[in-house]
Length: 251
Image (cartoon, rainbow, N blue to C red; front, side, top):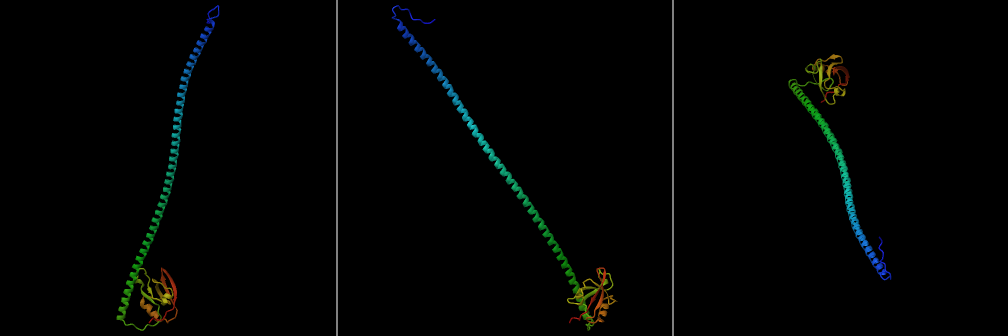
């Protein structure tokens, strides 16, 4: 029910009533405004708390983003280090292969050089043995010639000179032929000039058989110096004929 002013016949109380009513209205409005301000304050406080919470969330998000960036940078650095290590491992493998090949080549070269030196040493030892055998044979022949000179004084030499040291072919194991074998050639002798070789077996001279050293000396004593003679010789299982011009006997 609306609040109505009291009836006053004379109109004395009516303004006071309205003044009181206005004051009550102002107090009610102030109370309402105070309540509204309090409600707004509480709402503002809640909003500030939400803002602070959002700021904390944003700070945490920023920290997470920074940590993620650091982690990505760390992963990139680790990736580069891994790539660098792989490159170094590949280079090390290449160098190892090169070193292995170089060592193998060096070992192969040294082995070939060692084989060559071994073969040269073996050939030298063989040549030394052959030289020793030849020297021993020449020493025996020299001793034999000296003994013959003591027993049989030298006689004037007649005929042509072949310039060979000979032996009986049948006494040589490698020469089963009948004849005389050339053991060595004298320097600048007729046989050397005619390209005769050590080991050749003289079978005939101008068709006359040569059975031994005596036959050779006898036949050559009948040949004049410079008179060509034909020697039939056996050389490595082959019979060949060689023309020789005897020379003067050396002094």
